[in-house]
Amino acid sequence: MLTETLKEKNITLNKLSEITGISERYLEAITEEKYEKLPPSPYVRSYLFKIADALNLDGQKLWQEYQKNSQLKKSGLNDKLPLNRYSLKPLNKKIIFLTVLIILIAGYFIFRYNSFIGRPTVSLLGQLANAANSVVSSPDFKIEGQIKSGDQLAINKESSYVDGSGYFQKNISLQPGLNVIQLQVKRFLGREITVNKQVIYLPDNSKQQ
Image (cartoon, rainbow, N blue to C red; front, side, top):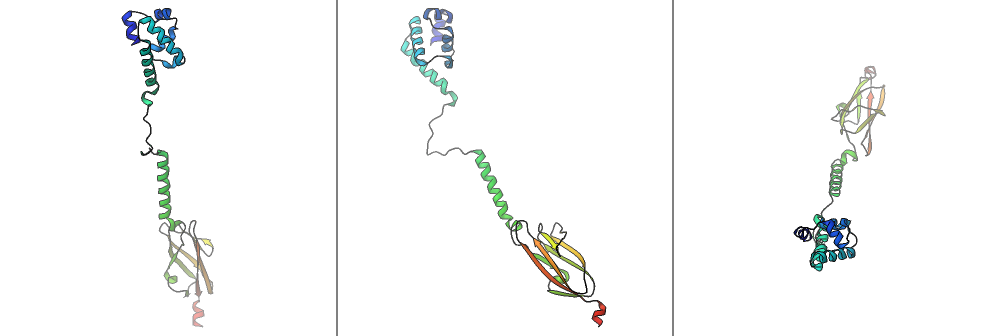
């Protein structure tokens, strides 16, 4: 309204400033809607009524238009409707991501519980598969078996190699008479079991006697 009136009457802001005594920078802020550069509202209201008198406009209407425009300017695209407390609130993406991650990690550990924490087992093959004691005539004896992949094995307190499938074998030298073979299997973060097997080595000359 103000800009159009100034154009119609061919009055510049400089001229209007001389007529009303209002600073030209305030007049420029009003016409360009740069309301943040204006003084408090009571001063602006006084300015608008002076402008209205100088241009033969309705001061009250000019003031109302200013209030409406300044409010829209402050709100703009950031203006939001009041929140409905019964409506679903948007979820935080970070919280969703962390929740899903925790669920996946927990599910993985539950799925692999037995691999990490459960009780280990060992299955022996060959001569030690079924018998508690074995009698042999050769000092060279092979121990072989299967444990869970990832478990640790020690034979007679010495760490033993286990392949990717859990299979192991080890050759040991027996002493004449009773030999005790101890197998210790330990699971990561889990329990440890100990299996003892007895092997009796009787040389051929002992058998003949």
